[in-house]
Image (cartoon, rainbow over all chains, first blue to last red; front, side):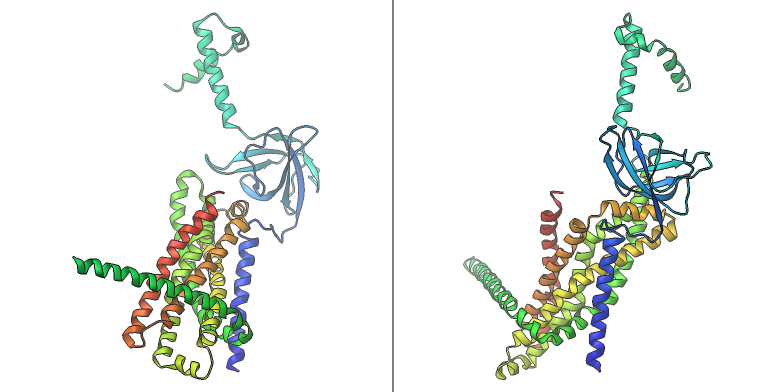
Amino acid sequence: MAKKSTETLVGVFVLLGIIALAFLALKAANLASFSAAKTYTVRARFDNIGGLKKNAPVRSAGVSVGQVTSITLDKNTYQGLVIMKINDTVKFPVDSSAKILTAGLLGDQYIGIEPGADDKNLADGDLIKQTQSAVVLENLIGQLIFNKAADAGSSNTPAPAPGASLAPAPAAPAAASGPKK
Amino acid sequence: MIAFVNSLGQATLRAFAALGHAAYFSVDLARYTPSSLRRFGLVIDQIHAIGYRSLTIILASGFAVGCVLALQMYYALVPFGAAESLGLVVNLSLVRELGPVVTALLFAGRAGTALTAEIGLMKAGEQLSAMELMAVDPRSRVLAPRFLAGIVSMPILAILYSAIGILGAWLIAVELIGVDPANFWSIMQSKVDITRDVGNGIVKSFVFGVICTGVALYQGYETQATPEGVAYATTRTVVFSSLAVLAMDFILTAMMFSTS
């Protein structure tokens, strides 16, 4: 009898180990994203997905409503095709828009969905047509430097070729630098 | 001066002799371990004594470490607006390092000392000699099942340690602090790799299981058959296996995670 109970306890011990391993593998690592909640998939095309990754959250008004399941390059349009799954309990109108946003300054990127006003809701497999790409910091900085250079160029010397297209530029920095002082 | 050099040389020779002896012992242990599969009942008994009985300390410690880690990391991450990465930080530190290492250190203290003392007292009581007289090799009857049980138990304990630690972190982060639960899990799932992180952690704990159990058995088997000898051997078990685990952890970490 004592022998039997020892074996039972060891069985419990091993079982606990297996449960813990399953927990680590399924819930705390990337083996599979099991979720009991029912979901429907929605697609969206972005010109630039930035640093968006698989399994990134999908949020609406900051509340997490789903997850990105795959990211591929659309071979026809050369856009990033993002497939995401959204909880079945949350329905969005068909004219909703999707944005790639960043959580905090250094945080991960996620997809934010802003609901539209249409009566019909997005169904399984639908495409979100209005999208806004991720903000790429390098592009922003490049634009800023380009603008600065153009400003400097247009104030010092008679406008070089690109200066012509930036004719309203002097007015904008003046307005921008106004509140700084 | 001559005496000093003399003693230095003798100490070095003794150290080499001990190392060689330990190597012989390890080879013996490895050779006898498969035979213990035929007496699986003994292994079950030992897993009960070594593994199951260590559950309380392992679970309590894992839970506490997970909670504390979550609290401390929260204060470090909040200034960067990255509080949601809390789960990831806790998960990686537990699965990769703290789980295997702390489990091995606790295991050396909880189970290793018990093994050493048990076998040391068997030797002091001349039970091992009695077995040899009955043509039963104590290495295959006494040592091998304990060795196998230690190797089996350590990874299970380490996994449990990590799992309960993550649950503790979840309790603090999500229930107490109010981190978004969906992000807590999804950031973890997107960054933690099952083979690289969880798998390597298990490999580590397996190696530590070999080290801790091997050291404990060696110290018990080679102890001087006196009360002081057993006490001394028990102390050495903890010191040697802890140092060996910490050193080995550095080597394993350098091998596993440096090139990723």
